[in-house]
Length: 506
Image (cartoon, rainbow, N blue to C red):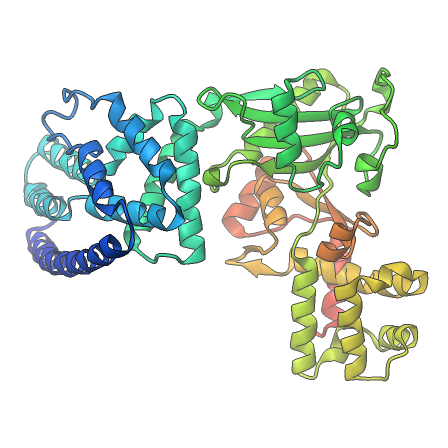
């Protein structure tokens, strides 16, 4: 129980907070009124927006009647969906702003219940628990009811996924800095996380016999290695390949996250052998089980922007591993072959920083700088740094065997540091690395000339990385990374990191 003096202090604090909240709400209401008047004079349909929201967002039932209150008619949800879809981008912002502001939590009621909860601390446990439950219920945003009812209408879940995509775009573009919009995003994410929990998802293997609509979406959604044509797609779902997707009963025909797998003899070190161009359709042939020793996860794509932050990809990989083990009991090697988005842009920034600080010579050894100068006909010093920056930005070095040979050791150790040493809040800065490390994978091997496509060279200087899944170590590795920010890596990666630290004088 909380002591009486502490209760008094907390009660006074809550009352002060409540007074400030009322004043703040009044100011915000006046601001919103000004926005509303401006909107009414500049945008058509705002009056209709107010009427529709007032009609479809029903009052929150009282605590006593919360389980007995009849649901609103389905037409309310359908009306709101049709109305929202008819709005342009600017009016959608206005609609979401008004929905989140005017139909959120009743802060006055919540603060009063918080005071009552403090008063109950000297009472029995049952009274305290009931007061907590009342307060918890009062913290439910009024619009949450509308969202729940929309989810039960045909097409409603997909609508809410797309609605959250709009909210995320508003937040990322800073079109609004309203805390109410951020609260709406949190409410949507919480609901979607429940609706898309792994137990409600279905693992589906995509083959050439799958419906054309699904195959077309698989092609359109592929974000890592774009599908060139139908022949290319046929190979990616054919022999020695597997394509899996999570689907949900509420979104039929919509793959939520897609994983492409190559079945190989050993762990692949380049993407060209997996998604190479094929002039003619591959003839049908049987897979030789003896040649299938490894599963290479070479592409994983989330297809729904509105499900950002809802964990799906890690569960998909785990389920696919079990599926493949069932099909190939002898399979022992599971690894990704992953791109390294952001490496080239990070490298450009690093070179600019070192040049500005007059430390350009610190990144490479004297011998390496001499080789760069000779290969690019540059003068010693700063011009060599500029020449290197130009080479990276234009990808000219890929057309010269000499330059490629000179830059290989340099770029490999810089890339190793980018993946292993560059952090954001203590975790790997690179999003792909962070994803696989959270899953418990080991940073296993960096591969030179692994993606020679223009996109691969532009994004990561053609380097790719294997994150290997040692199944008996993934749980331990994941816990070490998530709890202690420890990256499990092999001697090859750590050796390259050590070379970077030595040459860069870190």
